[in-house]
Image (cartoon, rainbow, N blue to C red):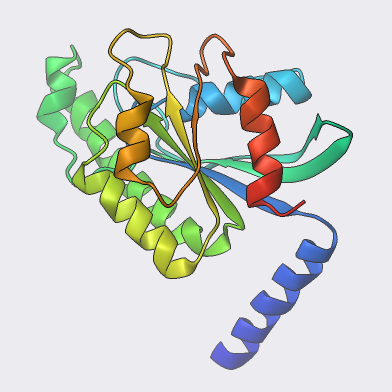
Amino acid sequence: MGIFGNFLRKFLKALFAKKGNVKLGLYGPPNGGKTTLANKITMDWLGEEMGSVSPIAHETREIQIKEQVTIKSKGKELTFSLVDTPGIATKIDFEEFIKSGMEEKEAKSRAKEATKGVIDAIKWLDDMDAVVIVLDATKDPYSQVNITIIGNLEARKIPVLIVANKIDLKKADIKKVQAAFPQYDVIGISAKYGTNVDNFYESLFKITNK
């Protein structure tokens, strides 16, 4: 059954790949702007938002998928399933949520859901055809979380584009992100204000080989 199941999984993946059903995952640490970027993409091309955002970490605690997103750039067209994932963290402490003003019961529930979300996000890596890593360009890119994510993607040989988000903020440093991960293309954007998003869309064709 295990061998058959594995064969069936590969067959279905190949079948969907032929139909152009590319799975594009948004990954990164909490509060990097993954869902803000997901909302920008879906608003631009579908006219609807994908998920809710919050200044409190781990607002997205479940995998969210938007099927049949088609983007166009310079006469080219790309259709994919957009997968917004919970923020990856090495440690999730409910006390951090209490500091943000949550009651203890809600904080513990959020921490439990966020922990499950991290596990699910890592499991979903096996289904990704390409990944966009969304980083807060005002923060140090040399973090354990970022290095762990990159390592997982390199081990799976998944094409990667790194987005240095929040370039509208004074502390943003794209060059630091580029220096941290020189093996990948780094695009500086502001998902919130749409700055440089056209270049981001163009870069998606490169990592999906379309």
